Amino acid sequence: MSNLMSDWLNKARYLNAPKERTQKKFSSSWRFRVDFKDPEPKDILLIKKSFPDLKGEVEELPFLQLRKHYFYDPMKSKFRSFACGRNYGKNCHACHRQYDKGDKRLTARTANLWPAVHLDWYYRVENEYGDKPYFIQPENRSQEREFDDLDTHVKVFGAPKFLELGNSHQEMLYDILGNVVSECVGCLEHDQETNGNIEVVGWGCKSCGIPLEEIETTTLGRDEWRTFGQRKVSCHSCGYKGLPKEMVGCSQCPTPIRAEIYDVVLPLVKQGQGKDKSINLAYGKMPTYIDEYDVTQPDGSKAPLLDRLDGPNRIFNEYLTENVLKYMPDLKDLHSIEADLEFQEEIIND
Ligand SMILES: [Zn+2]
Ligand SMILES: [Zn+2]
Ligand SMILES: [Zn+2]
Image (cartoon, rainbow, N blue to C red; front, side, top):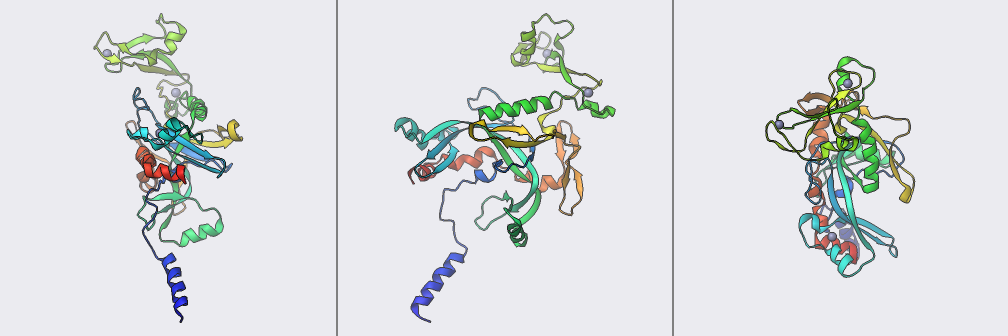
């Protein structure tokens, strides 16, 4: 064998040998973002987490607000988005480029990230680079067969994800969720065929529970009543100061319980093009309550998504808990590398 030949062979072998990842600043956030590119509806279960808002004014929001930069270079047809350094109390290279240098390829806005599970078949991947496990779907049948043969790929039903919504899509999700939480789940205990409507019948003290305002006796005007829950009150009975607690009634049962956004699986689609894109419930489909939704287990059998309630906590199917929920990423942590100078320089300067 000539020297040239072995040189070639060594190079070829080098390509296939396992090696250290050369690109140090790698973000895997895109792997967890729900991708609405294909027109098929996606069954989405929102997962309960609690976040403060971006300014630190409000606590216990179900979504993380993240300031993001959007980079678009029409000359290179290059579009990328990434977290702003300010989310992490850092000097931000992109902010410097955008505001101090007037780089028109950069913009910034707030994105809303909702922890969620996409209920569908995926492969959980644990690769040789030591990345955190992530979940992918094959693009076609032949890739599916390839994945089935790999030791690094495990077929699972469900994937830990997040919905990333700008402000207009966020409003559309509020409309969908607003309908969910106007329904009563207490009706299920009374074998009602449908869920009754929840209505606010009073406002009580969050601490001692005594009624502060009741619909039968209130002197509040319509708007004052409607927004009473958004203002701080002081309780004349126990001295509590803070937001009041709503007291609800049901249109058809004596045990009203307001449905929560975590009680349903939402069949979501994104429709339209460009700026007219909207997020909707799939045509002709309604949210399914989690106790009526089945997940498929690896042996092909089906089991209810909700195993049981433990006080206010939803205990999900054990298979889903072990194979999917356990892998939910910390959303802020997931994006933290994008705030680094080296990461941003690679996008902006390359
Ligand atoms: Zn920034
Ligand atoms: Zn009811
Ligand atoms: Zn009180």
